[in-house]
Length: 188
Image (cartoon, rainbow, N blue to C red; front, side, top):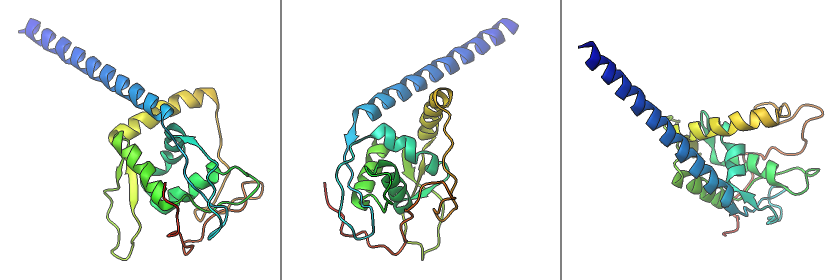
């Protein structure tokens, strides 16, 4: 009986190790895809301003920026503002938003890789915003990224309030007013 138990324990351990190895390989394949896929989302410096198309980004960069926001959940427009802040060419300038249709396209790319999903959290009927969160696989992939990047370059983000305003010395400009029109976004 104890020999059978030992054999079962060994099989369970081997199965768990094989599963961990398979998941690690899947994360590595996904990372290669993220690094090799580039997009050029349009963004604006000011609400109603001219769309800029000078920021080519790897999906890896998009996921690295937006993943932490989706640990719980994040709105499409909130992520569009965050991404615009990071990809803008003129860092001395404020930022508005990445075109929402293109932001949704980036989320579709990340969904294809099983990294994100529509948020399962319930919201009031009056809330017309779309929310996204990381999938279980997305959380694992983000953890893998941060395990590597934490050891390489510890980075402390500039402090900011929940409304997007920054502390003195932080980034200025920025937080897009919720009432800013975004329906004139260009289509790629």
